[in-house]
Length: 212
Image (cartoon, rainbow, N blue to C red; front, top):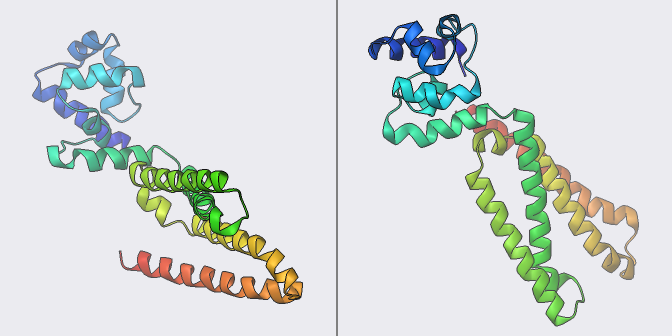
């Protein structure tokens, strides 16, 4: 959010509405010095004043925070961008890593009837829970803000690949032991594709960023 732009927008809306700084201040229960500071970009209105300020200026909250008029069809996209900007990139990346971890857990649960010797009732309960978890991950990935920042995170991709390959290795370890495969060989079987997937993900991410 650009504080200077927001302040200039507040001044423009106030003047177009025929209000003086004192009149706007009286309506909001603040001093005219406070309004002056907002308009000069020296400070922001208190969050509790956002709604009444928007009402007095005849604007939406998204327009106030964007510091400009927004077309009706653009409002959802602008609102999402503003919400994403209010959340730190570290939190967005952490959120994406959490979603990816849950996607791995969901897939493993969904495939549990094929992976584990569970009794029939329990296997299908685990499978249904996994499908629900995968559905929840997809829903929240689409619904939560900051999709571009989250999906362009290499760290989140590393977490996803690590969890996936670790889960596959652990599940296949007993079969490898029974087949007499040395531990070093089993490590190579999973480590090489894991490292290649990280390298491929890195170059794909670079290509995606370079194309924008």
